Amino acid sequence: MHKIFLRLGVLIMTSQLITEAYCINNKLLNLEAETCSSKIWSGVHIPKYKIKESLGFLSDTDIADTKLSQARNFKSFYEKITGQVQDRKFLQFAQECRNIYDEENDLTKLAIHLLLEKVTEKYTADLHKAEKLKEIRPQTPNNKQSDRENIFNIFLNADKNISANQ
Image (cartoon, rainbow, N blue to C red; front, side):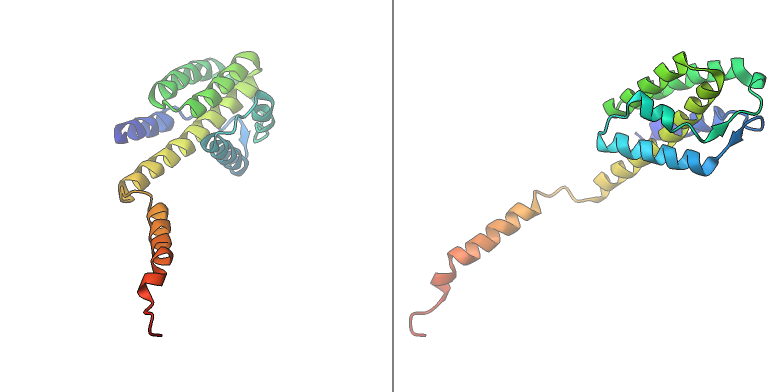
């Protein structure tokens, strides 16, 4: 599992797009990526129109520079992440992003690529944290159930603990 996270990290770093020709609001991008990642983690489906609404972090200044390389980058990035992250909820989101990418203009394509990169980064970080928590938490049976049984037994046997002479 650790190798997958390492590969995804390297993949995200190496597939970063040249952003000098675009005006990117990174705070808004991070916020949108965090929102999407949280929804995916919670199992909430994000419809295509909601994904499109979250692309306001990018404004057009000059698109012509890297159009062809971005198309290649997105396709290879998409194939790699869908091959490495096998979570159904995440794959559903990635497929929606791919559908938008295939249908939209160049500015939207770039925004989708950036959003999918950030969401992948945040979601894999969350997966990594969840794996670490599983390792840290002791694998004990449901403690709440055993606590309930102990309390029930105390009350059930309470009359046996009281002496008749009192």
